[in-house]
Amino acid sequence: MTLVSHTAELATPRTPLPTPAPEPAEAPSRQPRRVWAKVWPGLLAVALAVAAWQIVFWTGWKPDYVLPSPGEVGAELLAFLGEPKFWQALGNTLARAVLGFALALLIGTVLGIAVSASGVLRAAIGSMLTGLQTMPSIAWFPFAILLFGLTENAITFVVVLGAAPSIANGLISGIDDVPPPLLQTAKVLGAKGFTIYRYVILPSALLTYVAGLKQGWAFAWRSLMAGELLVIIASKPSLGVQLQYYREFANAPALLAIMIVVLVLGTVFDGLFSKLTEIVRRNRGLGATRL
Amino acid sequence: MSAGVALTVENVTKVFGGHGQRTTALSQVSLKVADGDFVCLLGRSGCGKSTLLSLLAGLTQPTSGSVDTHGHRVGMMFQDANLFPWLTVSGNIELALRLSGVPRQSWRDRVAELLEIVQLPQAGDKRPHELSGGMRQRVALARSLAQDCRILLMDEPFAALDAITRDGMHEHIERIWIERGITVVFVTHNVREAARLSNRVVVMSPSPGRIVDDVAIALPRPRRMEDAAVAEQSGILHQLMDLHDTASALERLAS
Ligand SMILES: Nc1ncnc2c1ncn2[C@@H]1O[C@H](COP(=O)(O)OP(=O)(O)OP(=O)(O)O)[C@@H](O)[C@H]1O
Ligand SMILES: [Mg+2]
Image (tube, rainbow over all chains, first blue to last red; front, side):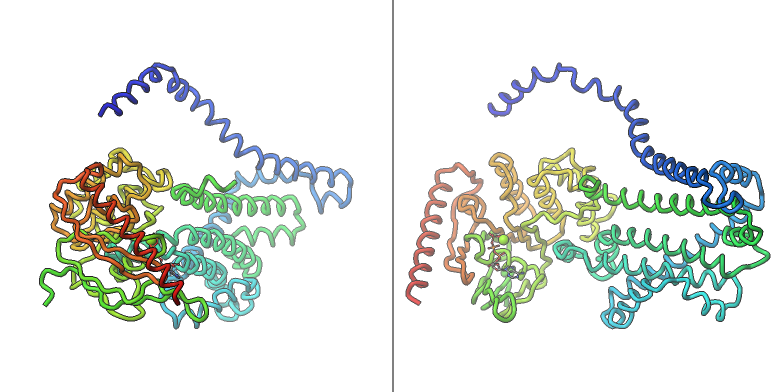
C-alpha cells in the first residue's frame, strides 16, 4: 500500500509537463511527408527511365517512326483516354484477368487445402504443382487452342493454369508451416477437425497464402497478355489485340502507349497485393523488422 | 473404480529421439491425482515436468505405460504463452470461450472479467506482439481460465512475473480453484510457490526424469508467500531437493 502511494507521488510532478500537447499538431504535417517519402522513389524511377529514353531518342539510334520520343508517346496516351475503344479494350482485358484470377483462386485454394490435408494427394499432386509452376504458361497455348479453339476459354484455361499452382503452393506451405505450439494450443483449447482449420490453421497460413496470391496474380497477368497476343478474337478488342494491331500498322507511339498501360496496370495490382501483405504482417507485429 | 481420482499415470516412460540420440525424458513415472486436488510438480530444469504435462494433455503419447484422465476435459497453459498472433488479446480469449461452447452474448463480460483477474483491463484491443513477456503470459493465463475444464494443467505460469503481480495471481488462481472445484496440476521450480499454492508437492529429478518424492502440504488457507509456515515448508522442500540431488549424484558415481 505505502509503496503504491509513494510511486504515485513521484509520478505527479511529471504530468504538468507539456509532452502530450505537440502530438496532435504534428500529425497532419507528417502525413503528406510520409506519403511523399513513399512516392518519390517511384517518381524518380519513372523520371530516370524517361530521361534515358529521351537521350536514346536524341542520339538517333533508330528512326523516329520506330522509336518515338517520350513526348509523342505521352500525347498518344492522353489521346487514348478520350477514346471509347481504348476503354472497351481495357475493360475486356481486366474482366478476363479478374475472371481468370477468381477461378484460379477458387481452384488453387481448394487444391491447396486438399493436398495439405491428404497424404495421398500430396504424393500424387504435390510435386506436379511445383512442376506446373515452373512451366512457362505461353507453352500451354498451342494445346489450349487445340482444345478450345480461338475462344475466351482458351485464354481463361491458360490464365488459370498459370495462377492456380502458385496459389495452391502458397497455401500448402502456409499450412505446413503452422507453428506446432499453436496447433497444440488449439488442440488443448478443444479445436478439432473443421474448427482447427477455420480458427487456427487457415489464419496462420494467411501470410504465405497472400504471398501466393501475389505471385499468382503476376503469372495470371503474364499469361493473359500472352493469350491476348496469340488468341486473337476479332470481335473483341483488348490490350493484347491493340498491341498486335498497332504493330501491324507500324504505329510505334500507340504501341508503346499500350505497353505503358500494361506496365502500369501490372504495377498497380502488384502494389495492391503488397499492401495486403503489409496489412497482414503489421497485424502480427512482423512489419517492423522489414524494410 | 476411480471415483475421486482425476487422473492416473501408470509406469509411464517417455523416450525422445530415435537411434543414437535418445533422451529418456521420463522413466517409470506413476501418479494418481485426487479429484479437486491442487498438486505442484517441483523439479529442476529438464526433469521432464513439461513432458509429463503434455502427456496428461494428450498432446504426446507415452513410449510405454498409460495415462488416463477419466474422460475429464483437460485445459492447459503452456510454458510459452503461445498466443495466436493474428488475434487481439480479447480475440484470443474469445476463441477459447467459443471452443468451450460459451454462448456469444456472454463473451464480452467474460473477457472483461478474465482480463480484470490477470490485471490487464486495458489490454483487450492489443495484439500479442505489443505486450511484454509477462503480459503475454498473463493473457495466456486468462485464456486458460476461459476454458471449461475439469483438470487445469499449468506450466510455470508465473515464472516471468514480478513478485507483487505474482502474489495477486496466486490469490486468483486459488480462488478459482476453490470456486470451480477443479483439479490443478501446477508446474514450478520455485519451492516457495509450491508451498504457497499446493495441497501436495510431487518432487521430480532429472536424467532420467522421474518422481523421487511426494509431500503433502497441510498448511491452512488462505496462505501468503511471506507466511512463516510457508517459509518453513519451503525450507523443508528445499532440503529435500538437495538430498535427492546428492542421492542421484552418488548413484551416478556408483554406476
Ligand atoms: N520434443 C522433444 N524432443 C527431444 N527431446 C525433448 C523433447 N521435449 C523434451 N525433451 C527432453 O526431455 C527432457 C525433459 O524436458 P522438459 O521440457 O519436460 O523439462 P522441464 O522439466 O519442463 O524443464 P524446464 O523447467 O526447463 O521447463 C529434456 O532433457 C529435454 O531435452
Ligand atoms: Mg518445462
